[in-house]
Image (cartoon, rainbow, N blue to C red; front, side, top):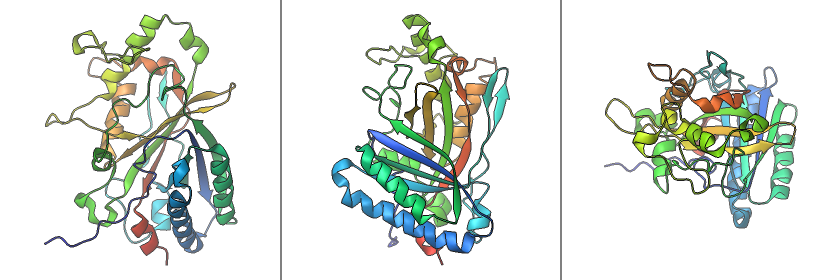
Length: 311
């Protein structure tokens, strides 16, 4: 008889989309782990409680710990599939690794509230970490990427989001946690906009205006949709939950790509399919117009894990 209570997930992992986001990447100062563990527990709990306080603006968030920092912070045990970002390069396509110790991801439908909370979180961390990178994301038109195409159409819906994104009984200590991969993609929009619309649609594998996926027979092997819709050896779809949003200014803009998954393999296979392509070298032609500037691997543990390890 299973009477275990499910560990509580961090609410931002599977949350539905928002209008705004703030991404904070930190590196920890040397030797602060014993103070950082309770600090992380406080911040994770704070984010959790704010989801109630700011429910009318759909506030949510999560904290994730970097693959390369995990063993310093949590000595007892490590998520089974947590490994450094799988950097790849082929031709002029580059998926570099740029790892961080901690990632705080907060989203909301009001930008001022996010700004306020981001400042609060940085104050709670004071003296323990350094803020290395900060980006602010926004919803563009009706959930479109800055290329003009609808983003995340394939995302799991409803309860299926939890099934895809959260670790289950296969790794009991880390149940309700999630493997997180983050890449900051800068788009070359002037180059992209010079393409005729049909050419853009062939690169994505969908129509632009009404977001209709090409029929299988019409889908170029180099289209983005073809390269990321993978199946495992049993023929099951290898899914991830995308929490991506456009980011940036006129000077530099693109997509903060965020993958949440119950394993780290699905993302790695997708990235490999984009960069290296299939056995005939059919890679993702979207990468001719969008360049990954960063690549980082994290794990977002359950609230219960963070709480339990805080002492």
